[in-house]
View 1 (spheres, rainbow, N blue to C red):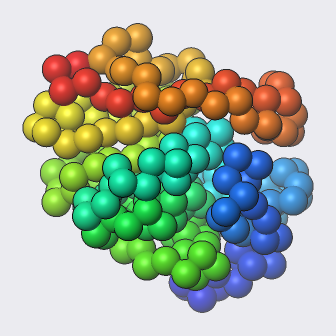
View 2: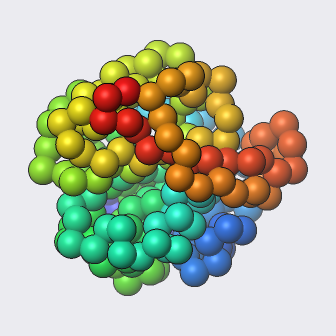
Length: 218
């Protein structure tokens, strides 16, 4: 599927809306869960793509975005990476706070298309990285990660990478709503939010979500 086809799909299957905790930002979001999953099913199998996580403003990303917008000086002049960026919500918030540069990394071409469209909606410039960069070093000063602890392999692999990045002097911020595989040590809380959620996606109508800082010695 071409880049233009992916962008057309995103436009067709979503509506423009703002996440509950971040009304300043507009995104292409799914209005209903099941129809979008059904619409993408054939392409997921054909192209070996992940589910359409990009079409939802997950609690971890909302918490990160809210924290960044409320602390606009934290990223001023910094080089930022939004890892497993999904909709690009955290990346867009980082760009709005005056970061020197912001990259959004995703392995899903639909996510890349959605991030590009969402960046345009919010009049910010993002560098798009369509590949698996986990484990790599880069020029980033700050790494953002929202909701990456939902599966053990992903959480463990990302955790090792984040710990190494933090030990090298990078600032690693992670938004997490209490997923099963959140590390038990090596994190310091920097903010906490109560975020409205959908029963179609979560098992409750709101989730307490924490922004964590990876400890340099964690």
